[in-house]
Length: 154
View 1: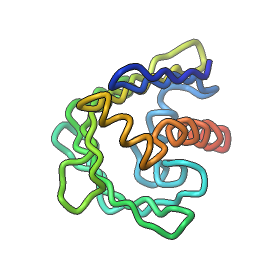
View 2 (view 1 turned 45 degrees about the horizontal axis):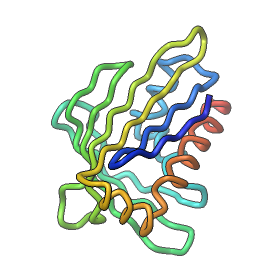
View 3 (view 1 turned 180 degrees about the horizontal axis):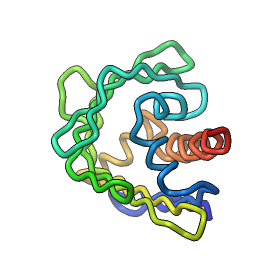
View 4 (view 1 turned 90 degrees about the horizontal axis):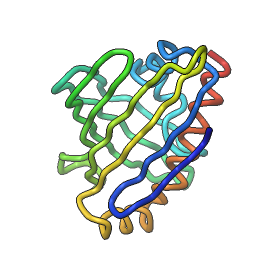
């Protein structure tokens, strides 16, 4: 199942990965793994810090194929290993002006993992702006594809 739904101020992506939940969790929360697949195709990442706990920060720079750098900051709100991540993207002056709230659920489906990522923006207009300026919807699809490809190699 690969599905992405856009409604009002939300993007919801659902993917089923042929990998156990603990492995998907590790790929998502271990800085040595996440930097190898995170982001749209053609992007690479430099991890600055990653502290996956409530109140912890993940700061990283996405390097675009056009040579542009995109500083990012994530603040973790809720962490329930290996089933739930809740975080806020943005919130620092030196990062890209993109603020949204994310909930990621990791559910077991037999030997597979169903991942549901819900991104909520402040308004529908803000989601439209982020889509127009950053290609958020296609980028999310490519990011999930890259995660699937990475999991197949782990």
